[in-house]
Length: 542
Image 1 (spheres, rainbow, N blue to C red):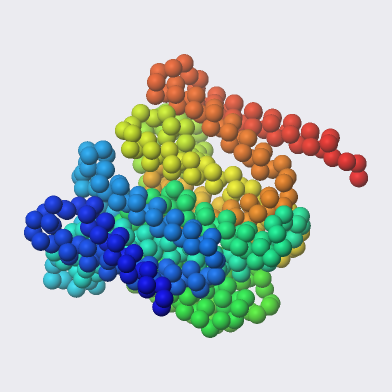
Image 2: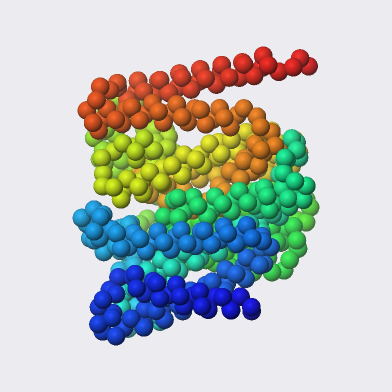
């Protein structure tokens, strides 16, 4: 309770700043409603900061975890307020950016949440998709409407939902830290870690530190956490499920069921599909670990049944889309229609894509979309494409963050293969495989779009942070050549396609697109062969 001594003044102080900076300041001052804004922000900040402090103490991460959580919260809140203020003046001339919203989805959903909150309709109407089409599941729409109705009934203070998302996003970091500490014995035992004894093995200087920093500062996560989007909630609910699973499996804590059930319920309300994805990951983990402390299959089956019932109840439009067909048949047809639509949408969105589609066999279009989606947002395009300064900054940071994380995710597969212990190897291969399957699903589901595809991909960021953190800690001990090789291949790709994008946008001499692809493949493969041969020659004789 002693944390309240600083949470209350900090919450009240930051609430004043947000009330001064948020939209409608002068109107609020003239109408005498400024106090309402200050109280609304403070009413979220004080309990939010207190919960963050409690989670930080519970996780036991010390000063380093406190810094990471603070950085995560400040980044998201500052970015959200800055974009809300700057977009009307320095963004593109469209309704959402003129209103201070970075994403159209956020604009539509938040506007409908305010309409619901300011009406006399019950909040449960948010879960009826026929009325509010901006949120097919209703979780975020209902949460936003609750905040507006009871904290800001007099004025649409859109920063309130940004503040809520930023607080929830920061709460996921102590959960992931605690889970990573519990997973630390699964780190590779060969080669030995260079970290001090008791530090890397307990997670504070190894897996937990790396994973927490990735979750805190990964640009796509920061961007989603600074807008009225579902992703910060989904990321934290995923971390909640992960910790609950480990608390049950490793520590036999009854409270683990509350964490697991709470995370699952949150995912069902905000996105049932992501509840299923996490159940699949955790179910595979159970099967891989096998025999020891086996969780009752009856309980596991019960969770699946609860999920399926919730999924069917929240997706009643399936039956309308395909009356008389079974659920599996509807899902298969929906996947087929989605892929067909995404190919069509990508084809229509860009003349260059139309040209590339015409120059390749139809059977290669789906692999092309998958590869194109994995590379989105493309860093050379963000650096070269003519656009307004604000969008260049946003695009460059998003792309740079992905191209910093991507080599670690690739190396994570290699690190898992190199792990000596068979049980550890199987688990990390499973986690790396699920991360890459989800990256490919996001690429296909997003149709290679530079916004939707990275947004879908970031939903499972806790798992990606663990795999990338594992790869980093393994490389610190191994110091092998594979991570530098991956980085060099990425550098070859970036430098080659910077030339292609420069020629495309600034009318410089340029080769055909496929010639650049061949250059990347030949130079990259040649570099790998030369470096591997060089390493073999330097190796001491057996």
